[in-house]
Length: 271
Image 1 (cartoon, helix red, strand yellow):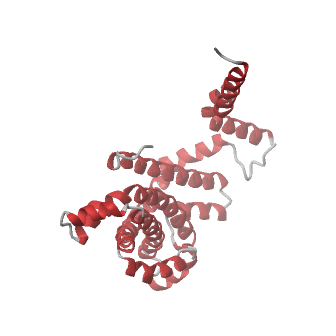
Image 2: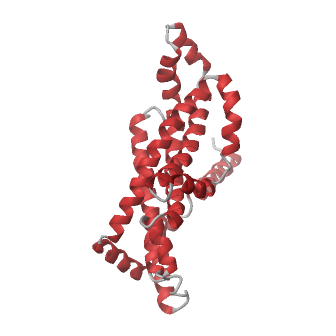
Image 3: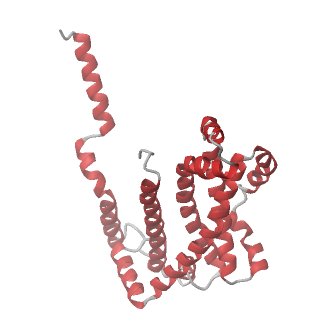
């Protein structure tokens, strides 16, 4: 028999669930919020509520996008930026993962090197770009190295975290079955750290776009960062927005692709 207290409790639970889900009209409107923002932006820009010099109408930005796309300028700059990120990413990710496994597996090495890496981590990577320009010049090498440095630290600390979370029992079982240290790294530490490694890869991807864009501001004559900076110099605001949005879309797409790969490589983790 249901008591008054039970009925009140059930009503409170329903209210809590409803509050968590949000009102029905909010749930229906949610997916269209970006479209609503663009429509309002268009209206406000056209009517003068927003200063069109700084916030051009989205339709004019789209028009600029297609002009740059058809002329080949946008494709060329996208290609340069992505190539720099790809090379730098490989240069930084591989040693970052290897060093993370080593530090996580060898305590003596971790005690010696962790303070050094921890002290270097807070240094803004863009702050050392002038030094890299002095060493490597204005060519592509300086761009590769600055991206590699940023990616290295993301992968190092995320891999290290994943390895340190490996239950000691797993290593004990592998050792009892005759596994060498290298075999334990490959069959225990690395697989267990994979979720953390993928987290590091996705963070490093976003960081790489930030770093390369900033480095292209001053040390390049091509790339999306250069396109944004040169647009600022000529007050081509619509072109500037095209560069900013393109970087955002490329970064989002790359992170989404890493997420798809992660679900295939690490199927035992629930998402």
